[in-house]
Length: 330
Image 1 (tube, helix red, strand yellow):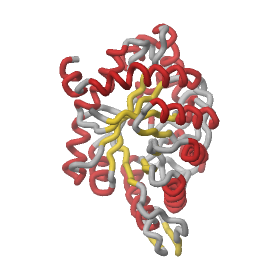
Image 2 (tube, rainbow, N blue to C red; image 1 turned 180 degrees about the vertical axis):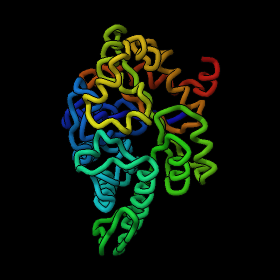
Image 3 (tube, rainbow, N blue to C red; image 1 turned 90 degrees about the vertical axis):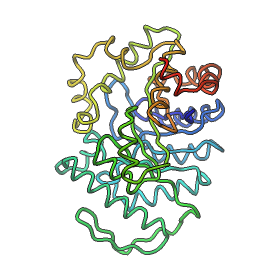
Image 4 (cartoon, rainbow, N blue to C red; image 1 turned 90 degrees about the horizontal axis):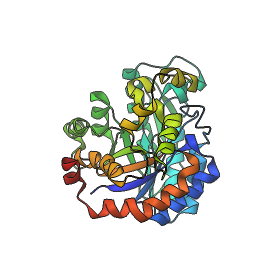
């Protein structure tokens, strides 16, 4: 049975609410918490996008035991990898060793703000590999000078370094990213329950390492309201990551999802209060070999009700069953 996490979705709630919600999630019994790191929401209807790293610092102070993780940060455009290394080391200290740095190759939506041409996927993976090398070198606490194809570091050193460096996760979606993660990551990150990703990760060196997935859901006692909310805020999700990584603005996602209907969203996202549907969505990741699954409740205003329902119904149900067997039956 995978560990079940809670997602602080920065695109749908303000910073104070995100901190309150993760404290509630800890009390409810979630095993870990992840946070998105965006400059823009996916759609205007989501309405938020605070600075994730400030929220993380406050969350570390507001919680005591729940592990925290970026899901995910791009260390190649908005942020220089040397700065990401410093932020992650500080978070590991503030959280008393509860932090995991999740990294990815990024989306144009968030990275275009600093200007320049959005690189092709192969270049983004090359940039990410250099970034990981820089970050790990700086976590040693030694002076680092690095000259790469994409990044330079000149006599940099982190002065506050945790005794144990954060685990480092890399988001995967295909062969190249799985190879990169297998070589460099402590953790594989993905948003699709595709067992082939895990197999490619293993072949590249990831055998025995955790795999963290993420599943969106829209809990509400009123199923119609749940479907409408999922359509209003999450219909962009159907585009897939090859598309979602390239579009530059929320208006682009509005246009790309213009033909998506409420029933289309309801087919891919469990909506309403039917416990079985939500369990099956998690079970799909367990069947694909994921060790951890973070839940995304769609809709910022619905978080307290969702967390209460998860504590009393969903989490106990997930803890009582063998999800792999459940996925096979479902």
